[in-house]
Length: 276
Ligand SMILES: Nc1ncnc2c1ncn2[C@@H]1O[C@H](COP(=O)(O)OP(=O)(O)OP(=O)(O)O)[C@@H](O)[C@H]1O
Image (cartoon, rainbow, N blue to C red; front, side, top):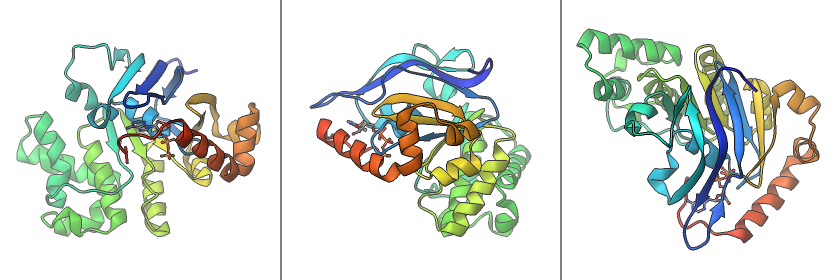
């Protein structure tokens, strides 16, 4: 347990309400340490996306969800609060799986958030855009086409543009939902390198289906199984000396477990809406 987590959950139990109720997470209490990259892994349907989205109340946009428990961003509660949601969300950037630029220029994709959230001069905006594009190692590739449409970039460049867009409002925490899974191997590697450098400055929580990626990038690993937090540990201990039998099984032959758990979940409930 960290003494100064950037973000933490306490007894978090989100339930999707609909024709059939699904308790997607069961009483999950976890700290996400500052300036660390935490990978959330586990079989299909175990609640990875739900946990990630609970960390900035994103699932509320798409689904009927009832939340028990709380998320704290620093000391501030995310759920039992009167503060406007956009103000809280500003501290928690979210990057989805599918690289999706806004239908705007490269420059405006990054400037969009700061323009909404603050009162900046043109010079300040220029500096924010350049700084964020440099942080994601994209500046040199796009500095001569800042006015071109963001959609004209390659998929790997777009994903780094999305990261730059998330950084532009100066968040503390970055939530990354399988951000390399839609990319070719070379682009995925570039995005991984970017994440590795960003964790020096930000707290990153990342969902991944790739154990190898978790091993390469993560400082901490969180393993979920059927909505339960089974094990959370530093990456090395997690993979070399897992303490729970389910973790051992997953680490040594995760494909089988993934199939079984996915089937069980699908039997339990059919989601009414997709969250992907
Ligand atoms: N919008 C929804 N409505 C109802 N149930 C949902 C909804 N979204 C997810 N669920 C259910 O909640 C549980 C957790 O889903 P979640 O998407 O968080 O898992 P996951 O680990 O991210 O899965 P995957 O690896 O397949 O993306 C599953 O049983 C799923 O069917």
